[in-house]
Structures are given as structure tokens and as C-alpha cells.
Length: 280
Image (cartoon, rainbow, N blue to C red; front, side, top):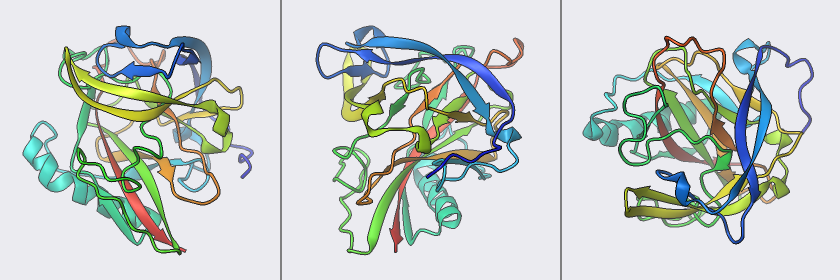
């Protein structure tokens, strides 16, 4: 794949914490980063606002897109989320990708930016300020059995492939003080990804531990975000795949947008996941 020429537009500068070094397999804690065992490589990078591109990014090319996704779900109502959101995700991603089947997970993990009065409250509710990929082949839903998310391992036919996606949406009005950015998969090398364990804890209590990736700095990385996300749309990006030829996932991170007005409210968002089965 080659990066499209002419995809210039509005950009902002921001700081993110790439992986620097660790004495052993790195671990990161969702709730208390003081427990992390790795040192960050702090970098200032350029974030490209794809809202201003003449040719928007796609899942096939950059590994990230925005899709219309209206919903009437109240995300503070866990029963509504559990009963309806996975089905809605499956319908939207199936229509977007042409997949044969999509399994949407009936969880919606809410995140609150530092301006929100709910920041650092609850279980795994902080926006991540470091580039990462949520799972590895050892923890990818559909590729292995996962008791927490209720997903069995898929038995794929020879002509089938499985691709996992993250589905991210805001439930607060624009603008966003901490947007989410995803890295163009065309600019991610295999050596950029560092196996790590994510520890999803709440206070002193461990909730779940799952293998994931941290990310080394690479000057080729092109970070993509969409300004002024609306509650009736979703940011969708590639998380993993079963293709025989390796295709990069899209690392993602939140960043503080220096252009966000100081009077804007804190970003509130919901993250979920799905996987899709394609037939060649």
C-alpha cells in the first residue's frame, strides 16, 4: 500500500507517550499508571484532521474511518447497552464493510476526559494518553475463546478471514478537548509493536489482565483524527486480522487538543468492539 498524495488539511500538534523501555515485559494499568513498569518516550507529533481531507480515510486503506451511526441508547443504562448496542454495531459494520457476518460486543465502556467531573472515577474510565493496540493474537476476540466478552473461537473456512474493529463514539457535544486519534496502518511497521499486558484494575482489585501492544516511535507514523465528533457518528478502526499476509492494526491514543476552547466541556465517550467475518 502507498500513502495517498494530496491528503493535506488541518493539523494540530500534540504530545503522546510512546513506549521507551522496560526491564521486562511491560505492563500498563488502566486505572493507576503509577503501577506501570515501563518508561515513556515522550514525543510531539502532528495530528491530521481527516474532517478536512478531500478524500476521507477508509478501513481498507488507512484502517480508520467515520461512519454515520445514530442511536437512541442511553449509555448510562447498562441494560439498554447490553440488550441493543452489540446488534446496532453489527448492523452498521456489516453495511459498511460488506462482511458476511459481524459479532458486536454488548459492552460500552465509558471514558471521561480530565475536564469531566467523572475523570478517574469508576472502572477503566480514563482516556489512554499513550499509543496502544487493545489485543494481540493471543487475546483477539474470535481468534481465541474469551470468557469475559462471551465470544467463542470462530472456526473459519479456508476462504474466510476474520477482522476485528474498535468502535468509538462521543456522547458529549463537540468540540472535544481530548479527541481520539488512530495511526494510519500504512505507516505502522511490525517492529513498532511491543507485546505488553494490560491490567484492568479498579482500586486494589484486579478485574482483567489481557495481552496487548504498546508502540515504539516511528517517524513514518501518520496520526489521524476527526474534529468535532458528533454523538450520531462513530470512529471505527482496525484492531487485528487473520489474513495470511500481515496487515497492521491501527494503534490509537487520546491527545489534548490545544485548539479546544477553554470553556468546552469534558469529552465523554463510549468504546466497544466487534469482529467481522469475510469470504473471499
